[in-house]
Length: 420
Image 1 (cartoon, rainbow, N blue to C red):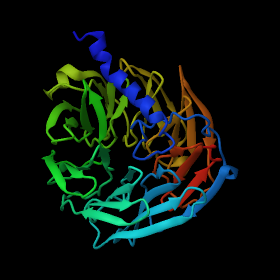
Image 2: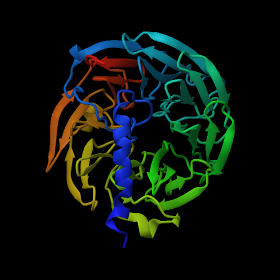
Image 3: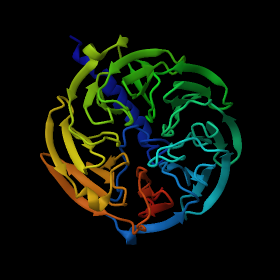
Image 4: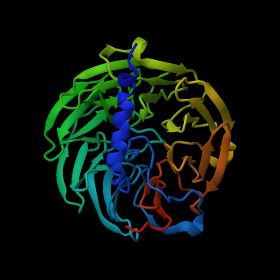
């Protein structure tokens, strides 16, 4: 049996990381924020809002569902025009919503994509000097300066998949890492973030998937962890070598792995099953590192899980049903319907949390603020006064006291900016 110190080492590392990023928490620079788990650590973010709370709203060209990322006074996001024939990267002034720059990154005949996906679903990532955008087969990976100058573009090949791509890039030191899951020729790749030069490329199982990698530190070394159709895999970010694999259940592997304490919380994504993995090890660690596994009777799971307090919260995409699992045992604590699905649409956006409240965005733009405890407490149902034809599948981006919420065609800024 592992010692208590050894078992809790990943927790100490995550806490230490949290202390380092608190000062940078105002910049939500990539998918799921600075802690990669949807947690905002800043105080004073809105919990309740309405149309009167909208400071500005900016119509966006085309259609897209990438979540906004923030660096200083700038927001970055993507869109697709002409049914995917053009892919656009944008820089927006967070102070007033004006479009600072908008560039067509790629023009061509679009690849196939699912009706719920489209061609601009991958969230960008920025290091404050550059912004990286991924469009799958539509030109691959693009690097712009934050002022909108194209620095490089890397075509990553014709990996095939009929439902499109959505995994966002991950920055690891001097590299940008991109998951390219597909039905054929699937791989994960590491590139020099300054030049776009390919450093390594590692074959992945041929199966469609849309999961963004995360970076963790285990026993003093970094690991890049990615969900997938058959389970979770970890890689050495410097070499791309596969380190370990934990077999999953029920396929797809769409949701992002969620780090919390000394465990990784995983949701399979097809018709359920959720489980927790202790990171580290070598080879197939299914029998040794899967801490718990809970079957799910769900219709489809698309949003990633989020951990709030002692609860791992999982939202059923189609049934508008939220389930709370005990983070240490996987025991189901409660399962509650938040609303009638027919009235609010599906839940596709991955939730975020602050001040002990989790925020779930429905396709029709209602944001359910839920406080988990012994039972589910709906604190508020928030809206921004969107049009009936807008679709909300992007996650909320919190930053400096404000929230940025994107529909497929409009970007909203909610609340007053905190004093610097």
